[in-house]
Image (cartoon, rainbow, N blue to C red):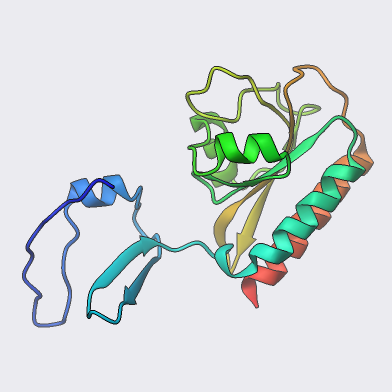
Length: 182
């Protein structure tokens, strides 16, 4: 674990400013939410908040079912920056917590539903030798904020996508949104 030790003064309103290197390390952007956890030893743990954390059992169930319904596809869930879960066990071991590509991130934050029918395929995982191409990517929006995206993907560059496939991914994304909002 990489430790960073910084001493900061608390202002009269109880605020502290997180130094740039800590914000960069946690990949925090303006308006991101953070969790503060106080341990039994009165230590504070600060981490980037993900609305998807509280519904882990549900999203595993939804994405696993979805992967069975869309032919030649695997499903991954991202929090908007990093991979949270892959339905393929080997990919989950390889890619969990890896950054997604800047191209994928750009489309997610533009809140665009895309498929290979509308946007040419691109690699979804940042800095890997393996090529994993998206087929369908649907942003997950909770309480009007981006919580991540649901992505149907394959290691084959040119695969077809049906309207039914797109609707299934949209439906699963909506189920995840509803679970994360409650």
